[in-house]
Length: 112
Length: 113
Image (cartoon, rainbow over the protein chains, first blue to last red):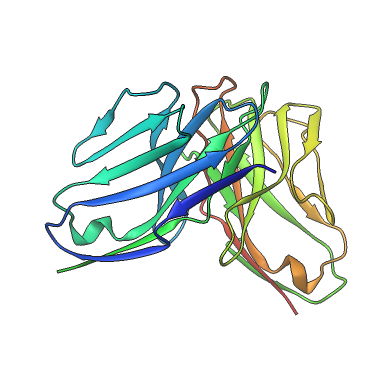
């Protein structure tokens, strides 16, 4: 059975802290791994990873994939209150269609 | 550029009623899909389409129908609403190809009483 497991389920940090969010997966026919940020409405795209060991970076956020150990991490440095959100990990698994299998998410709260 | 537009934003139905959730995208994306999001569970795929005239079932299709008569529109029909269909529904689209991320609409919050 396919599964995507995120940890921790929730996390509370102070502004300026660095956080690491984890995503492990067991999915047949792996194509890609994606990270999304969800505030009050639509999930917004952060990163797509398809190759092991290549770090993707955008400002204070970065992510890397390990296809041998079947996991990915999302790092956020110098956290700000605007980083408070649910972070979703999803895996693309189907040839010919961009269907995604989602984890349940990590709820990050950043306290001033 | 509006992206993915969903209507309505909120809806309350009585058990047994039917309704259609609308989804439209203006990015000329071939792929469109519907997900539902429930507390404690990840987004789950209901139905998807890889182009006009082509639809297929996802993980949780029972109780829902879809059609894709144009590239832009992908409506989701609830045939006879049940309380178990109380959820937040998201429509998403992308270009085809494994390097294209999904773009999501703002969701429809549906309550079935």
